[in-house]
Length: 297
Image 1 (cartoon, helix red, strand yellow):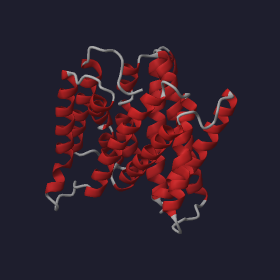
Image 2 (cartoon, helix red, strand yellow):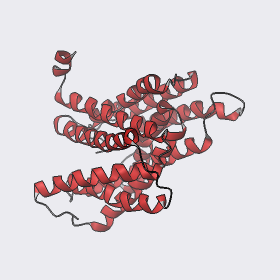
Image 3 (cartoon, one colour):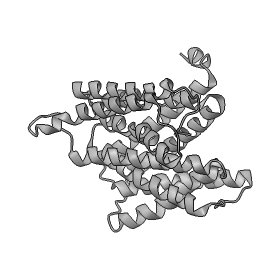
């Protein structure tokens, strides 16, 4: 298995590492929430670890910590933090696979926003993608129409996942603008810089002292997040962005596997069909366009 992995292109290797890192991070979030650790506390722990690692990296590069376009950087950090809050909440109240699939609506939102904010042309493949993804979302949430069904998911969990996905799309658009003038480490640094004080304020008096097991899980949340970010950054260096984006959808598969192994969450037929439609739409959007340059970087 190790020899087979070594033969894969470097871009694909780092993409798989990124998807694995983010999947493990989401699994740890779900696990630590079972210890009754508040969502805001989980975000604060992740932000603290990410802030320290990012700061050390910036110092290593000997560049300005706060960058030049502070207002846009702060906006990116704020939007990303609010989106992260919604995503983490959805993971704590929904099965891991379902929450992860809903998060992968963000390429659709990003494509739509790029038309208005970046003046990019809306390609036919993107329109087809929108139809597939919205149909998949409808299939996934359809059990909630019948409230007595055992496969119904919390409506606020679904709303949070979709809102978080939309917030992530806005953050990607801002990152694309910032990437032209700011170092990637500075852009990443502003995320935890905003998320840490925001999460502490929202946490208020609800802090729960973690025991040894939950403390270790909180540390892993931060470490796996960094692994996911580093993997994605490295993948961009060795492969075109469109392929990296496509490879990242393997995270949905990892989420289903971890959901079964760690939480005994067997995906329903609605999840498999809806998720299949969403992933099909996403791949159509990635490979169907004439331009090789991805919208999300």
